[in-house]
Amino acid sequence: LEALPRSPDVICLGSSRFQGLFNETEVTRELRRLTGRGDLRAFNASVEGGDFIAQEFMLRQALARGARPRVLVLEVSPETLNAYNIFYRLHVFRPFRWEDLPRHARGIARTVAPQRLAADRLLPLYQHRYELLRRAWAGPRRPTDPEARPMTEAEYAELLSAPRPLTEAQRKAQYCEPRPDRPFLQNYSLGGPVVGSLERILDLCERHEITPVLVGAPGASAYRPKYTPAIL
Image 1 (spheres, rainbow, N blue to C red):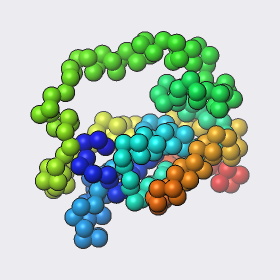
Image 2: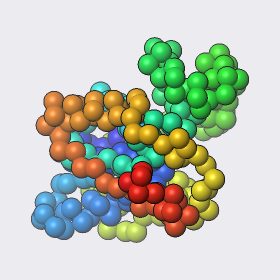
Image 3: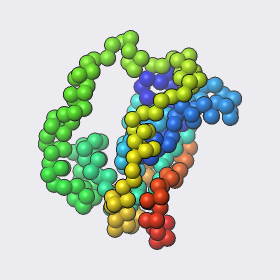
Image 4: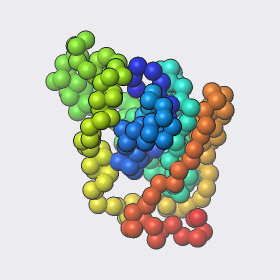
C-alpha cells in the first residue's frame, strides 16, 4: 500500500479465499476498461483468517496510512459471522495487543489453548522467529529497490499490460485441498464480537465517505453442504 503513488480507489478485505480470488491487477484493468479512466486502481488487502475482526484492523491500518478508497469490498460468509470464532487462533498471534484481550476474552477462552495464548503474549521473539530470521537474512532495503519506493504510473501500466504470476498465497488458495473437518460452523449462532467489528467498519465507511460492498465468498463443494437452511 505504501508503495503506491496515491490511495487506491478500491480496497478488498477478506480471507485467504479473496487472497486467491481477487486479482487486483485484473480488477484494475477491468475498471479502467469499463470506465475509460486510466488512473483507477484496486488493491487487495486480504489476509489469512480475515474475518471482520481482521478486516477492521486492516481498514484502520490503511486509513492511518492515508488510504481513502471510494469503494471497500468486504468478504462475508456464514463462518465469518459465527459467534464461535476459530480465527481467534490467528488474531492472538497477529493483530491483538494487550488492550484487545478483555473485549475478546470469552471468544479467546473458547477457541485458543492457554499455552498458545501464553506463548503469543509472553514469548514474542520465539513465536515470530521465522519472520524475524527472514527479514534479517534479506537485510535492509536499499532506496533503489522497487519495493522501497512508490511505483510510478508508467511502471504500473507496464504491470497491467503483462500477465502477473500468481503469488504463493494465491496458488495455495486455488489448489489446496479443502478442510471440511475444521469447526468453522461449530455451535453456530449469529453474533459476537465479529458483528461489532462489522458495525464499526460500516461506521468508518460512512465517516470517510467510502461505499462498502459485501460480497459472498464462493465455497468449495466440501463446504457447501454444511451451509444448512438454519444457518443461511
